[in-house]
Image (cartoon, rainbow, N blue to C red; front, side):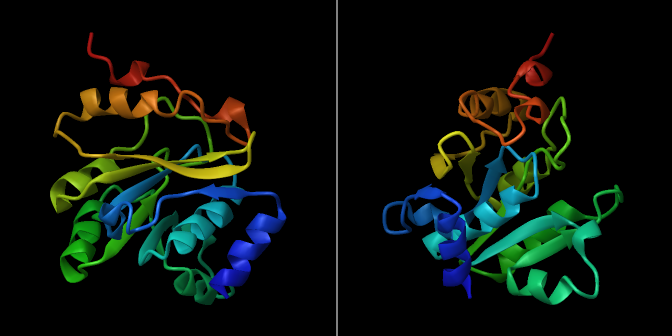
Length: 192
């Protein structure tokens, strides 16, 4: 079924510029951030990307997509539904627990946390990587070239603002499906 999903994404013109786990063994145990995230299409392409590489991936998604009809499909796809509106959802600690339970695990997060424009990305992906002692794979979904790419493996230093300035540099040439919804600025991370 996953091969069919990948095939259908390719039928819509998407290409994959992705490393293999032999080239980047860190992919077996990392947090992948997928950006820009401006539409639901990003989920379909993003899921195809992690399956194309062959990763044991858990994809974090807001729980409003969860219902009696979608739950079996989401579980099959490796989706973990998150109650974003609940500040006490313990997302970071739950993700760290998942890393403790499984040797080969990749967690996929959309760092913007929503398809709407945001001034700053959510910090959860960074905290998960830092506390689980895993790297962050920086991936893009480029709608201009219709290419899914993993650009770089980033190792967090513990200085969130400085690291975000470095991370945002890699997204300056990203082409979202809806560019007006994607904030490429690192201004929200610069100290005054």
